[in-house]
Structure formats: C-alpha cells, structure tokens
Amino acid sequence: MVVMILERVPANVRGELSRWMLEPKTGVFVGKLNARVREKLWQYICSRLKDGGAWIFYSAPNEQGFIIDKWGKTDREPVDFEGLILIRKPELS
Image 1 (cartoon, rainbow, N blue to C red):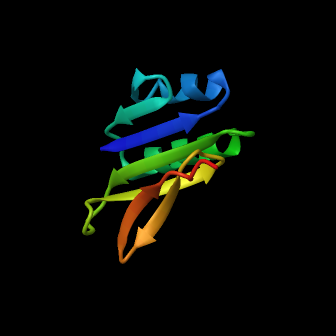
Image 2: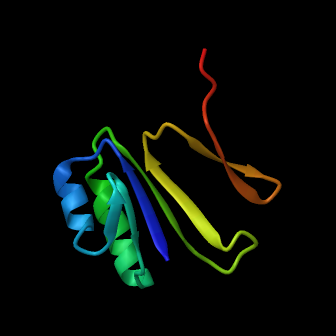
C-alpha cells in the first residue's frame, strides 16, 4: 500500500498521479504500486513541486510497518524518536 500527500502542487502533477492512484481527498492519493512504479512517480512528483511539498508512506518490513519520506516545503516534519518516526507540527508563536 502506498499513500502520497501533496501540498501546494501544480494541477498537472495531481492529474498524473490520479492515473495510478485514487484521490479520496484533494491532495491525498492511495494505491497499490510496485516498487518501480512507486519510485518513478515519486521522482516525477519531486521534480515538479516548485514551492510545494509531498509525503510518501509505503509498506516496509520494519517496526512500524512502513517508511515515510518527505520532499519540499510541508507544514509538518518527520522526527526520529528512538527508532520510531513521529510527525511534529510546528509550534505557533
């Protein structure tokens, strides 16, 4: 299973991704992709983000059962906390 979350990306990037995955909510894509297709789509997205950001979550044989990767400017950050990846929301000042 693969989940991608896109923030502030051009419409054509979302359009390309919707050819391979379902978009249950704007900017959130879910699908079952093999590793080659997943990597090609991730490279495509990262090369066209401009000022946007993207997350990818995919199954892996680790403690959490998935891997998280991020590219570009997003409103949250992944943080490694003693081997577990958690998501940190920045404090508002």
